[in-house]
Length: 260
Image (cartoon, rainbow, N blue to C red):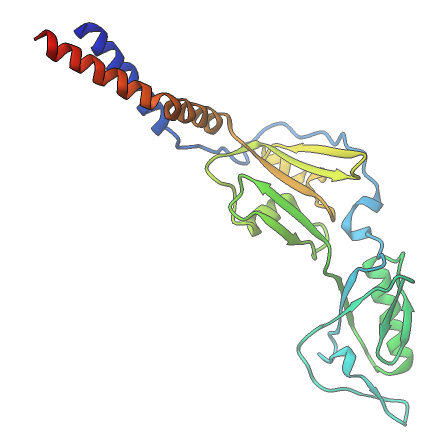
């Protein structure tokens, strides 16, 4: 009986130690062979070549004079009067593909890239009201969604051209200790035809992987590593059988005391 009790206690202690060993070790950006670009990519997929659509929100400002576009007031002499403002202006693209700009009226921008729309609006203001405009245009409603083992989950705006997976993970606060750095999924495409790209951040060549340049609507899922999954299973097993183990140990102690 004593021998059986001793063996049972050893097993219980081993479960406890296994449950406590949950420290994770990540190996990021190790030197490995180059990653072949096997993905089929087109310019239309890159956010640099994203085509403006109805309901998109454009942020527009004049960098040359730091003026607020909505404050443009055409004067009688053909020159523009503006009030100083450090804020950019947001304009929503209507269902007909146009955006309404002060002094210009409805300007059709649907189907244009960000740079094409920026040059168009800059040219129109140069011909009408502003002497030397430098227009900055951003599409601020583009976003990606981050889920899984990352410190900051949620939606993140995709404003900068060619934003990479590493940059976004940095914005989200980095990976958790439970993250599997070798299994980061980028889910893109349509609901009927989703495409999954797996990025291995333990390989330093992933920095140059063109598949890791993010697109609007991407879902990034950071999987849990094997050790964390195994520890959770052990912990769940321990929680389920812990009452039975305690009851059994108590019964053994009682039997042992009775025999003595």
